[in-house]
Image: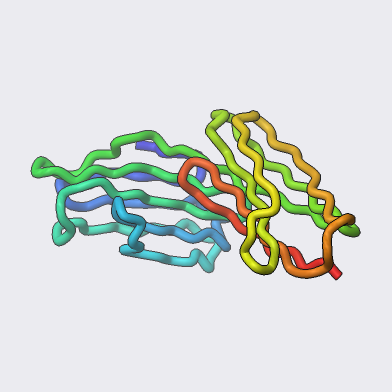
Length: 174
């Protein structure tokens, strides 16, 4: 089964899962996680040639597992189920696009592509961890400029959450 253009996933037999990444995947990170988010396998791709990995899941309990391919702009997730009958690719691969932050003067521009219009939150915390700004959205494209020109200098943390993924950007304003 082809999960996406960069990632090929096949169930080889009842306990083995084969993963293949096309060439040009250098800098990507491949993660296999359990349903609690515990990382069972992590590999940073350091080559531009085709990458192959076979996972033997015989010793892990039945349940749901997540295969994530994390690159500079997105996280691609494929859901794998292990049952008494073997392995099954539960869901086609889904994407979460990573937010883009641009800082200029005392303004932070945030861009997030959200084609499935999933619930998204944006929170801003000051250096003491106090929430100073909050936004919820389901927009297909979230464009937000956060103006820090009228706030005290210091460190601020911007958090964005979408589809179970959280992204953080630290901003130091002087």
